[in-house]
Length: 268
Image (tube, rainbow, N blue to C red; front, side):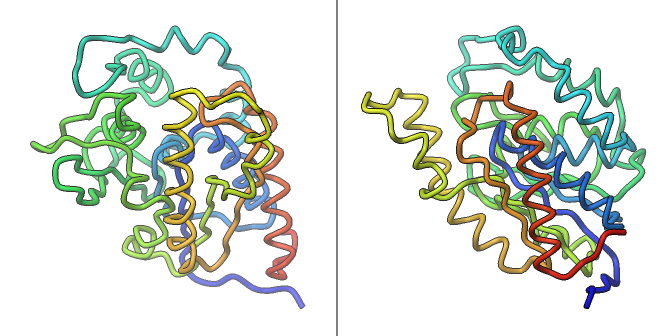
């Protein structure tokens, strides 16, 4: 018997670097099944995809953007500096976000939306839901040590994954009665394929894997309160491998279809 979803629907889109491109595939399938959100909460890459969707871009347009970027030339977005708080200032990344979103504010968005960030000085979770969207997204995606923190309201903010990897709780606070939680951080078993190399891991690998191991545990706790939990199989995609966007999107589609089938939610 097909399950009928009632109430205000929310998407909680988690962080996980390039693996988060799978959010696009997940959303595409959710739409096919008639699950359209009224609110979206995003962490890190989930904040970026969520902002584009909340602004009113169609899933096909977001997918076209993700597949159209020459991710092999991501170095063009890197503006290294002498800052002691991060390797990359992020001005060019901000320019890219502006090309996608313009000067949009939260009040301009078509859907309720919130970004999750972390106050790096006191470890507190900060939910951003007013003011310029670009600044909020830039704060949420600021991987510690890589991107410089963003100063918002006197606070220095970094990646929200440190405190709320999959912001299901944020969706609840926004009034969502049925929350779809999407985790894109693979567990240790999902990363076995990557770990078969006999060569010692690089510094970047050590840092990113450390974040992922801790992030997966946090994500699983966050997902416990989701009504529908979706975890795409993206362990073979590296944290910075945005050139594998097509693979990630397909993984998102497959995971969403499986989760919806298991939940008994029929095609819309």
